[in-house]
Length: 452
Ligand code: GAL
Image 1: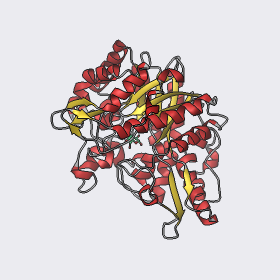
Image 2 (image 1 turned 90 degrees about the horizontal axis):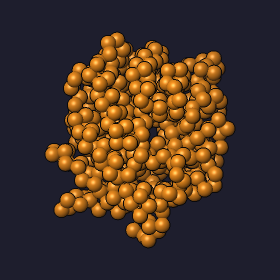
Image 3 (image 1 turned 90 degrees about the vertical axis):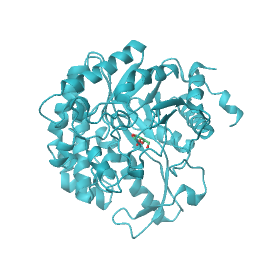
Image 4 (image 1 turned 120 degrees about the vertical axis):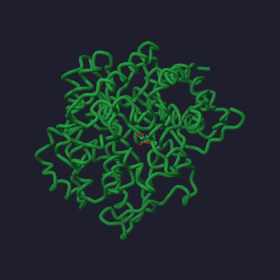
């Protein structure tokens, strides 16, 4: 650790800056059949052999469903003001549509009430990847009926919680769940193929804007956003073919969802995949409906990507040159650590005319933590946050309208296909005993937030 850690303090970001920590329902709640919850696509996916590392399942996870009161005390103790969590659609509507589950509704009322009691500001994410399994049977995100199903879910949530909660995030990283879930088959529901991907992209983009409109209509004085993953894409060499490869991937990673949301329509660059998207969805008819005037854009950044041209990869014709191969700093996931790239992505989002405000709604890292005598000395994570927050402050000081930062994540949890080995938390969880241990990074955050 270097001495510059001590110089950075939350107060440099201004008094109104939103400091938060984020979790999601599927990754934390567990209690997967309790109180009438229906199954989600991830519950089924986890049962398929070889899909998740260590054959892990999200069935119990960190048992946040039963332990939320204690966990919120930890949020408070670490000094965060904002608590971002997601609502499990299949707790609210076990079949995805149809009958509302009163016990599911009651759980989130209790969670919200507890936040308010502790003085924590709740930020609700409506969709963080846990689609009700019943809807996947009908085609899930590839079905145009998603718009109707999702609208109903949003309406129920907004009507129930809108009096208490003003901050809403419609989707978590649509690019991640459509590409990993419907093209590459690496996340639930494990589908593959170009058509599945393109259909799910369009239905997600439509649902995202519609979700925003529904909340605007129902919730008074709302502050509405949605989140996008972003990764700067850099060519491995200056060869025109590598530059073109980087540009193709950039369209997918950074523009595909953001631009239609801002009213610019889908990117229409000369790229086969985009041409297919335009034809398949008749995109030109939907420019207006894909647009919603979000109060803030949630920017989520974990890594940049370096690519080179590759003729063996269909359509995209680009392959990654990994951080390990390039011998640059990386996390336990192999993700490049590059705070300057984070800074550039913030500037890039801000440069869009219709982006009003930015919140960094997720950022964090997995390192191979060790719990030794009740202590997790995760110096690398401390260093990571220190570097990324320094980059953020640089952007803010240049006048970028970035108004918040939410760390990913409160505690070690079910990290999707990586199961439980990839620990991103500020708090260590022993998944056998459910014992929580605040890591050095958690202590570092508390000191940083309190200005020590
Ligand atoms: C994000 C996702 C989170 C978390 C994180 C770390 O893409 O929204 O749920 O898993 O990545 O991989």
